[in-house]
Image (tube, rainbow, N blue to C red; front, side):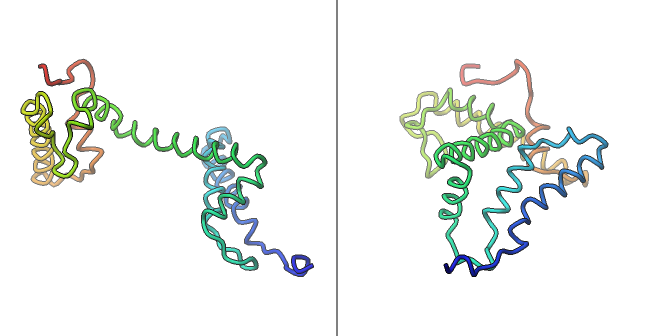
Length: 179
């Protein structure tokens, strides 16, 4: 009976209102409603709903909110899997956008985790081709530092992404330890 006395709040509709506002703004702004990826809108509305505080209900932890969100969507394990899949997709998009997957893959081919000193952030003493790998890393750092200094001298704005793009060669000219 206690739940019957609690009143709802317009704040509960806020994720839906924000989703519709963004969707219509993108559709009207671009002239085509199909330009806005619905998964982005759903993800945005879901994230807003998980971070909101209820004005009438007792305070819940983020974990409790996620569990409630998943149960409300049907099978809680399936919905949680969809959330993880969406976050993995977002991470992949960001990582590939900055070419991090190529870099990690290329360096991972040459260096196994057992050959890396994570405290000193360099190949450890047991690493085969240790000196060659350190030389490749130092050459890459030199290229990046040189580009940063050149941009500073020329008064150009730069970000980490623009520096990486300007110092990365794409194509078949990738350098490996054997070269």
